[in-house]
Length: 93
Image (cartoon, rainbow, N blue to C red; front, side, top):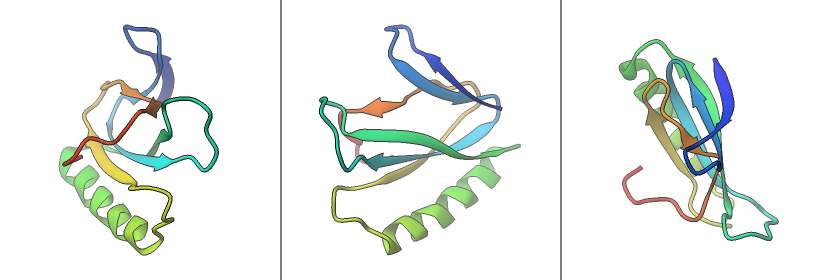
């Protein structure tokens, strides 16, 4: 189940009780120092299914490149807290 929460530093975060696919997308209009918004796109029973879903989503994201910045798609393990808004996307995610 998708949940919005906070991390140890009380920053907004998202998580799920299953393996989940996260899409980090640059917001068109932003005023703070965290231009990327992350959302949980899908949840899966195991890592293999999550990776297959992430791979398919990466293909869709590449086909619809917005030109505003580099989107990222990555897989997170159950109960992993991911920041809802990020400064930048780390390479390899």
